[in-house]
Image 1 (cartoon, rainbow, N blue to C red):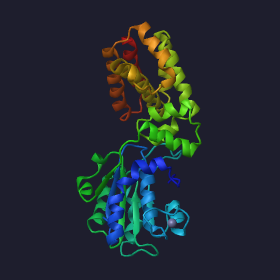
Image 2 (image 1 turned 90 degrees about the vertical axis):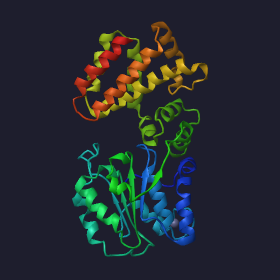
Image 3 (image 1 turned 180 degrees about the vertical axis):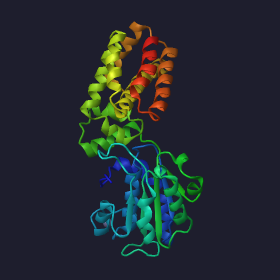
Image 4 (image 1 turned 120 degrees about the horizontal axis):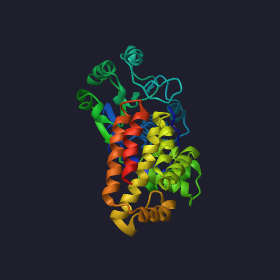
Amino acid sequence: MKTTLPLADAFLDAHESKLRPILSRYGKTKEIHSTLLITGIEGVGKKSLALYLIQTLFCDEGGTKPCGVCKSCKRALSGHWFDLDWFEPETNDEGTRVGQHKIDAFRELKTKLGMGPAEEPFRIVVIAEAERMTTAAANSILKMLEEPPRNWIFILTASDSSRLLPTILSRCMEIRLNPLSGEQIFSILKTSKGLDFNSTKGQVASRAALGSLTRAMSYLDEEVWARRDQILGLLSSPTHEWMKLVENLAQSQQDLHLSLDLIESIFSDLLQSLVQGEGYEWIHLDQKESLSQWMEAKRITIPKLTHVLEKTAEMRKFVNLTLNAKLLSQEVLIPILEIL
Ligand SMILES: [Zn+2]
């Protein structure tokens, strides 16, 4: 678990209101729904909010916010002690590719079923990215959700709740988080990364992240800026130069996703600037002039840009299914270039 507290004010402004009905009910009755499901796009802050909720429920101060300094608040950060079990899907050795929750991971949990909490008011089980449970794992959890032990709370998080078993979904009270706005992301980055208020990089990363804090953070990497420069440079280069990019795209799925993200955000800037005119706020705000000139020189039209965006969306679907990045790049990226 890689979550750090305290959370930025802008993060709480965005998401805390979703917990208010639950916490105010808890304040009055000391009761809480035994199965919560926090949903929202990847990187919006589901796990951070889960942790915030756990700290609030466990905090020795007993208020409506965690104090952040008491023993219980600090232990919650560790993710594991007797009253808290936090499950993440298995990863590969480099920790890059996210795998699944397998049934074995939950076996130990089963042995605790008869036990109540040791020190806290509840025992809490977090299953992060719950849509990644194998069917066997999901069924073993379902049994626990159907008859939750007294004073146990399950908190599931999911970016794609449609992949959860309907029987699990129906047991859960859903807390749906909205994508963060560009301003909210910038404000969070400013607090957590100490960004300069006028940082172009921070502004572009916040807007290009499309609501995801994790994505915005990854956009601050030098590698992303180098890739963006490469794509921008190639726009004005002869088509054969694009083969170099195709080769780069083929190196890994991660590269391919990044390039697609960048191509998509650049082309959606181009499209929206034509559709919305002068009032449009560019994602790549530092490139506004040069890209506008490029479009004029190349006589780029709305249908051409729409076509490119359709192709990237199509490509993204395939990327999730196959590792053969090179083939896909050649099949989809080259046709994009031909229409420009
Ligand atoms: Zn506390």
